[in-house]
Amino acid sequence: MSINYRIMTKQAIIERTVKAINQLPEDKAEEISDFADFVSKRYEENQLTQGIQKLTADSVVFDFLNDEEELYSVADLKEVYNG
Image (cartoon, rainbow, N blue to C red; front, side, top):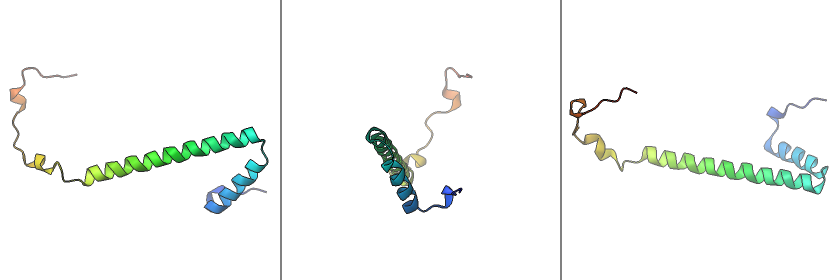
């Protein structure tokens, strides 16, 4: 019997995972717990990073720089890098 996991609800996924963990020895169950902690922390860090990026993008703190006149031009360069 084939199960399409893509259409499973979160609760169904949790139940399937708990059932699989219950069939494992303690050390393997602990590995899964450690991995779940890792994924959770990575997700939290990603959410935090996205939040910071959104705050920065929406911020008006540096908008005054858009109104600054250009102080220097290409003509002011002593050496041009063509790397």
